[in-house]
Length: 373
Image (cartoon, rainbow, N blue to C red; front, top):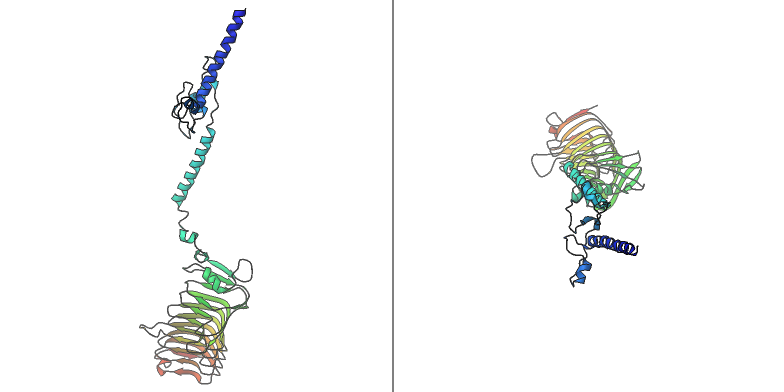
């Protein structure tokens, strides 16, 4: 009996030591199969911080081949008991690797889709990272509210460089000079009492100046006063610019109300009054040939001006109908220097110098045709 008990006591530690040695071997063996840091220190070698998790080491001390991001076969998930007993199932800690691989795969897929669909092509880097003026803004509001621009000029500055903006103006008086140098810009007053006023001691400063194409203004009242010298205009369209006016009024205390030199004006439902000089001054371009400059008027009323109601000269073209001119100090209409076109249904009254004046060629059938009613 004593011999049998001693034999059993000796077997247990031996089997237990074998299991411990196998477990320690798995924990201390590096990824490349080299001895663990602890065993290397026992031999006087240098230690390594990197180690392979126990689940990646075989029972014989070798490192099985694995594929990152892919679950191994079910046969890789079991190990035999080194004592010859039943097999043990080892839980693999591969879910972290699988999750990481899944996230990486999703990110790569998203980047590939973005590249394929070109979703960033509409927003070049210089626009995404630029300032307010390069954001390509298409619609803006001017007014006293939160997020609105305090002036039309600041809204224009914030609009896209290539133009194409619509600027809506709330009720109020805006004391500023508006210079439009971007194409396809619309200024729209949102009520009947939108006033833009510019009074300055400086010369040559119109309340509205247009140098670009396809600019339009609706429902705005313009008031102007600038130092009185040559080319003193309330609203001015320069050569190459084009302006469309609808439901607009203009007054200038120091010069002509509406003018162009080589530009294009389309005015409909417009009132021009109390101008120190002419109501409208329309000239062709002054320096080059061929001449440019065009004025189209419909339902336009001009009154109480210190010069002519309409002054045309320098090869400008005119096309108008239903124009009313009243109580001007000069002629109702005066035309010089090869003006071409037709003015139909003009009603002129109380102009001190007469209804029509200028070169004979400009109103006797050889140039501009003026039809009075």
